[in-house]
Length: 75
Image 1 (cartoon, helix red, strand yellow):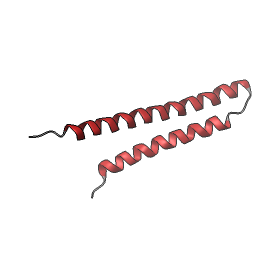
Image 2: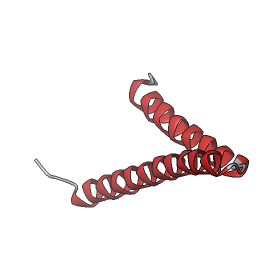
Image 3: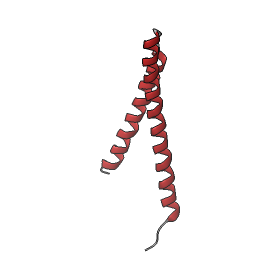
Image 4: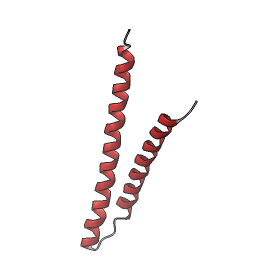
């Protein structure tokens, strides 16, 4: 049995990068929603922050859905 260490390292690297990217996107979404709360308390508008938050959440959802598709796709 021979292990392809280069392929294993590649899978690890891509998995790590995608995981960190998703965590950063989700964190930015949470931060955008917290700005909305802060702006509402101060009486200001934070429409750009809320829009950015929804875009971040949509990107997270898209990435997760694509991952599920890759796992379950029959080909």
